[in-house]
Image 1 (cartoon, rainbow, N blue to C red):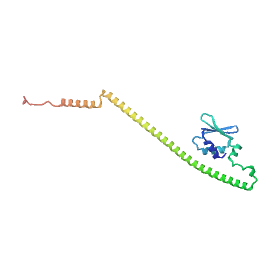
Image 2 (cartoon, rainbow, N blue to C red; image 1 turned 180 degrees about the vertical axis):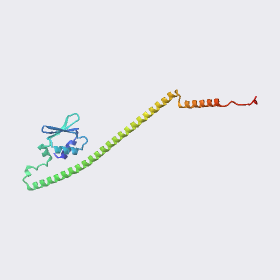
Image 3 (cartoon, rainbow, N blue to C red; image 1 turned 45 degrees about the horizontal axis):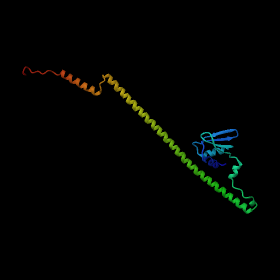
Image 4 (cartoon, helix red, strand yellow; image 1 turned 90 degrees about the vertical axis):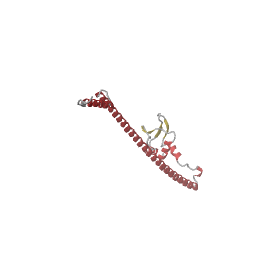
Amino acid sequence: MTPWDLRRWLMKPPRGVKLRLSQGDAVTEMNPRGRSWSKVADSIHAISPQLIELVASDGSVIRAVRPGDEELQLSQAAPAPPSALTNDPETARLTHFANLLHRAYEHSTNVAFAKLVELVERIDDRSTAIETRLERTEGAYRRVMQEQLREAFDRAADAEEAAEEVADDTGGAGPLEQMAAAFLQGSSQARQEAPAPNNNGKGK
């Protein structure tokens, strides 16, 4: 199987959440989350496992494939001409020409789709990165706002405690009451200190 064939096999519904790659007695698990399917297919093709299993979230196997099976490779190859026409040179020439066209179209189609998929995956990765940055920015903004709110509540509590201490020191009087008491006290003191009127015996 080519990486392109692996990618198509991976993307067939239903899709799994985990891959299990078996190479002899060694079993490797791969989590494709956050990675493009083409990169996952390239990695699997480089590992060349004997068995690939697509696993669901509950641990059950959705489907499995053996990339090295001869039947699978033969099914992907071009069909052979009928045995009655194998000895005809003209048929052999046309068959060879058709196989060349088939391989050329298959290669160009695979390359075009691979480039298109790579472009779409890059756009998806960019969108995911932008969303991640926005989430981090929103989280930082919420934290700053919460800190500012806590600081505002702390300042309000400190101001309330300071007002209570002042009220205790002045006998519970508020600022207006203190101003009124000071005004009355000053007026009384001014009346007491004012000199008595002197009529010199002229007044009756």
